[in-house]
Image 1 (spheres, rainbow, N blue to C red):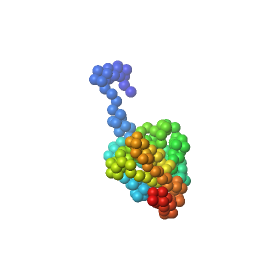
Image 2 (cartoon, rainbow, N blue to C red):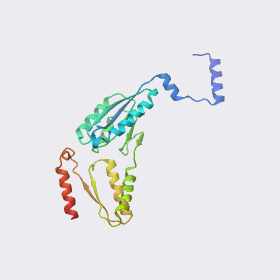
Image 3 (tube, helix red, strand yellow):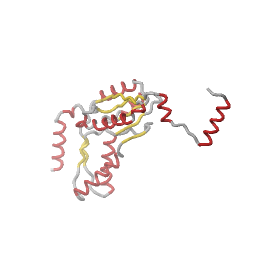
Image 4 (tube, one colour):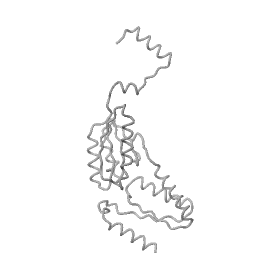
Length: 224
């Protein structure tokens, strides 16, 4: 809303000093509130492990308070496939500017991600769903961490030791990759391959001790 002569003077001066737009200052001026949906396991799952990343998210929101961030949590029980589906459906219907997702639990997130409205960016943390258009991933290289664990185990136990992998979440992508990384180290080192025991993928059944006793008995009988 200025004269053409003034506009040209301003643009010329901006070009001479190499001016570029400060996106952060512009966002502050717009006073826009950015809404993020956070999809993650219930904080009490896995011996309250999920309280740790939740505290990190809360700290980030506080540190970035001047950017006017608002978060809404959608918790699911990672051991209940129905809970995962319902949680994701609710989050996908909730209007937001972006999503932060921890795809833990049953390996069904690839289909659920299709529920996210087009144009909504999302990032993964703790684990990821490969071959999906996620913006970023914050977490370990699961395969490499499995290989590192195997190397440390080999240093402790020595060569030609009998080792076992108890896989309590065979349908978790990052657990699957850690298992592959762990076993690959021994193969490349010419060591005996570890035996892999997969706990029953029926998570509701695993809530009682019968499955744990079954696997323990199988391990003892095969190793005795």
